[in-house]
Length: 300
Ligand code: BDR
Ligand code: CA
Image (cartoon, rainbow, N blue to C red; front, side):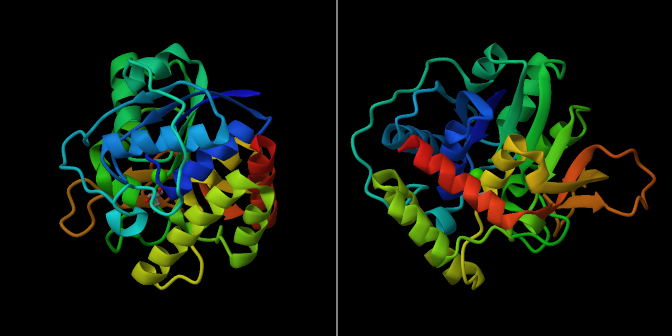
C-alpha cells in the first residue's frame, strides 16, 4: 500500500475522501492533518474527529494552520454549513488529536504521498520548513482548466490561499492537480445516495452528508447533483487509471484584481514554460463511484 498523508478541511466531500483513503487497500493512511478553509480550524478538526469516530478510523489527526499565509480566512459556510459538515447526526467522539503540529506529523510520516483537499497552507508551510526531498508526490484537489466556483475564475481551495498554492506549484515536487473540470463529472446522483444508504449506519451518514451537500449545490449553483470533489484526488492515488492527466504548466494568479486564485493552465504550451504539473482532464466516473462505495462498505 502507498504511504499517504491526507491534508484536509472537512467538509462534506473531505469526509468521504477520508473514508476512501482509510477504506481502500491500496493506501496506507498514515495521518490526517487539518487546515482552515471550509470552516475554521477548530470546526474542521472536530469534523475530522467526528467522521473518524463514526468509521472507526484510528490514524493520528493533527491540527495545522488556522489561517492562510497572507490573506484573511474565507470560509465556505454557504456550501458546508455553520459546522463545516452540516447534515448528519454524529454519535460520541472517540478519537482525539495529537499534540504536534500538522507539518511535524507530516514530516514524521515521510516519505509519503501527500493528498491535499483543502487550502494549501499546511503543504506550503511543510515545504518551507522541511524542504521538498521527502515528499514523493502531491496530489491536490484544487483549481480548474476552466472557470471557478468561488469567483468566476478561482476555485475555492486555491482562492483561499493563493500564495501557498504558488509555493506548492513552484516547488518542483511532482504534482497532480485534480480540478473542477474533472470533479464536476463526479456528480452524486440520487442513485449513488441510495447505494450509500443501503450499506448500513456509516453509509447513512454519507447519505445524509450528500443530501445536505446536494441542497446547497442546488441553491448556490443550480446543480442537479453535488460534485464529489475531494475523493477524486484520493482515487487518483488508489488507481491512476481512473483519472486521465496531461502535463502542463500551471501558474497561480496572486495579483489579479478579479482573478485572485485562478489557476492559469497552459494546455497548449503557449507560455513556453516547462510543465510543473500533471493536470487531470478525464475521470472514469462509474469505476470511481464503485471505489467510493467499496471503501465505505469495507469500513462498515
Ligand atoms: C473544494 O472546496 C471545498 O469546499 C471542497 O471541500 C473542495 O475541496 C471544491 O472547490
Ligand atoms: Ca476540501
